[in-house]
Image (tube, rainbow, N blue to C red):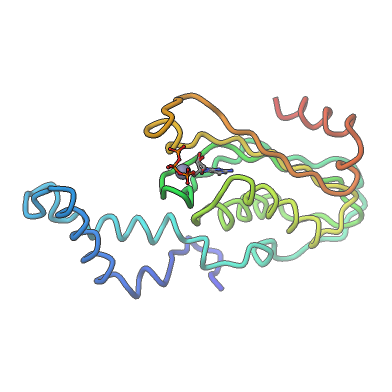
Length: 196
Ligand SMILES: Nc1nc2c(ncn2[C@@H]2O[C@H](COP(=O)(O)OP(=O)(O)OP(=O)(O)O)[C@@H](O)[C@H]2O)c(=O)[nH]1
Ligand SMILES: [Zn+2]
C-alpha cells in the first residue's frame, strides 16, 4: 500500500518503456511526425502523467482513512468543495468537479484530510461518476458505522463537452445516501443548503 506521500501508479512505472512505445505508435497512426521537436518527449510525458492520474489503483480506498477516533460528536460533519479530476472509463477523457461529503457520526470520527484522501484514491482511476459517489458513501458507512452519510458529486465530462453531443457547461450531479439520509428529506435539504 502506498504511504502518505504522493504516490504513483507502480504498474505504469514498471511498464514505462512499453507504454511510451504505444503512445508513439498512436501518434504515428493519427498522422503526426513523432520526430518533430514538440513531440519527441511526448510519449515519456504522457507516461509520467499516467503515473499520476492513475495513481488511485495503488490504494485500497478504505485503507486511506487510517485511524478512526472515538468522539462524542453526534452531529453533522461536512467537508465540501473537494476538487477532483478523474478519467471517464468509456472515452478515457477527463471529467472533474467537486465532491461534498457529510456524515452524522455515531461515536466515531475520522481525520478531515482522510476524506480528501479518500476522494483521491477513488477518482484517480478510470471511473464513472456514479461509482465514485457510491464508493465514497459505502466506505464511510462501513468504516465509521455512522448514523448517516450523504455524498454529492458534481462533474463536467469532457466526453460530453468537447466531442459527441458537445454540450459545454452541462453538469452531472450524483448523490448517495446511507443510513438516516436515505429516508429523511429534511436532512438532505439541510445538507444541500450547507454546501451551496
Ligand atoms: N452514467 C455515466 N455515463 C457516462 C459517464 N461518463 C461518460 N458516460 C457516458 O458513457 C456513454 C457511452 O456511450 P456509447 O454510446 O457507448 O459511446 P459513444 O458512441 O461515444 O456515445 P456518445 O458520447 O453519445 O457519442 C455516453 O453516453 C457517455 O456520456 C459517467 O460517469 N456516468
Ligand atoms: Zn466519456
